[in-house]
Amino acid sequence: MSSERSELRPNLSVLALISFILAFLAARAFTTLYPNIVLVSGGFHIHHFWFGLAMMAIGGWIGISYRDERADRLAAILFGSGGGLIGDEVGLLLTFGDYRTGITYTLVIIFVIFSTLVILISRYHRIIRLEFTKFLSSNASLYIGVFLAAISIAFIAETDDILVITASGLLTTIAVVIIVVYVFKRLKSGRL
Image (cartoon, rainbow, N blue to C red; front, side, top):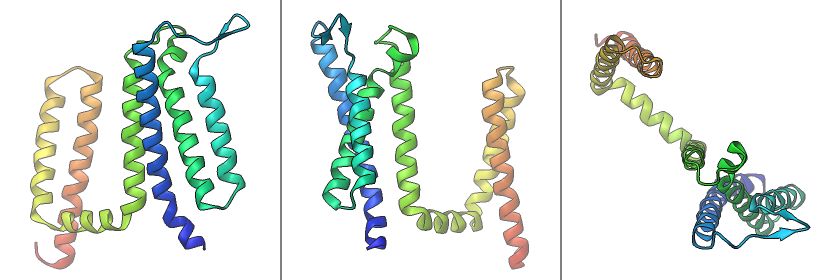
């Protein structure tokens, strides 16, 4: 049973991520098409991130309370949808009033990319490791490492922008690691 449940987890992650994206898009479309429809109760404007918090809490509670495939799927959908409703209003929460701020899209895109990478890496880590090991043993890794190092060093030399210097420094470090691993593997196999 435990191995079966571990196989379901990546699928539940994808289901939660899809629910997040769809809820975000639905909330954004609704507020764009109907900006004057607002839930007001007792003089308070009830934002949909409150519904999102409730949905995440309920989804989380269902997820930890039941050991059932249907309950797991329901929990993933509720949790992801609740996150999407909260994500739609993250700009409003951070700026204290600017619902249309661009930071919402930036943070949601970063979240979706990060979540997608985590899901893919957790699901395919063995294949990724095997392919990366093969890549580091190939001549292509040396060529890519040298190319990255040369370009990154050129960018560092041409700018005073700390962000460009930091990114280029990171790429240079990655390039040097790729080159060192390539040389080490060649020396170890006696082919250098």
